[in-house]
Image (cartoon, rainbow, N blue to C red; front, side):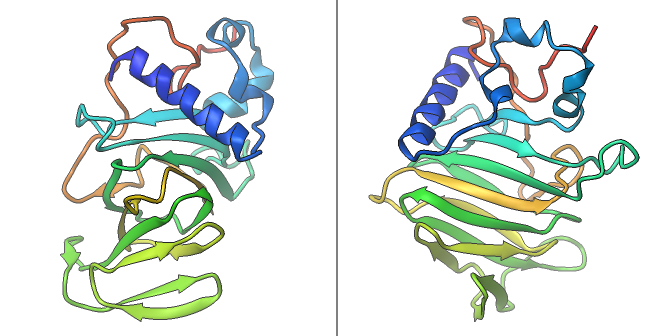
Length: 228
C-alpha cells in the first residue's frame, strides 16, 4: 500500500468514529514525532501492538480487500509475567465493497459487534480436522445470547447493536451488506496475536508492504520506535 492511501484510511476512520461519538485513548492521536519522544512507560503499547492497523492483506486493492483497525487493549501470551490481561478489544472500520478474507483462529475466541453504521454480513463454516473448510455440515452460532444452527456458508446478518460469538477454528469472513453504508465493528476477545493465530483459507498476507510516497500521519502498530 502507498503511505498516502494508509493516511487517508486513518483519517476517514477518525472522522467516522467522531461522528459515531466513539472516543479514542490518547496514544491513538500521537504523531510520529511524538512517538520518538515516548519512553518505556509506553512499552505496553509497543509490545502488545496497540494502536492503528491498516491492511490490504497483501492484495494491493484496499477498497476491495482490507480494512482499518485500532487495537485498544491486549494482553501478551509470550510475556504473561509482564502483561496479565487475558483479553483484547478492537475497533474495525469496514466500508462498502471491502472484504475481510476467510480465516479462523486456533486459540482466540471473539465476539464481533456491529457498533455503528450499516449491516454486517459474516459468512460461517466449520473446519475439518485437516483445517480445510467444511462446506457441508451445519454451523452452530451464538447471537446475543441466542443459539441457532445455520447451513454451511450462511451469511449471518448483524444490524447495529447485534453481535456474534466466534469460536476457535470456526471459519468466517465479513463484508458490508450493499446499500447499508460503512460500519464500525467492535471486537472483544481473548488475547490477540495476529502474527501466529490467523489461519487464512486461501492464504493471504496480514500486514501491508508500504510504499513511502508521503510522510506518515500516524504510525501503525508495527512501526513504533523503541524507547531510548
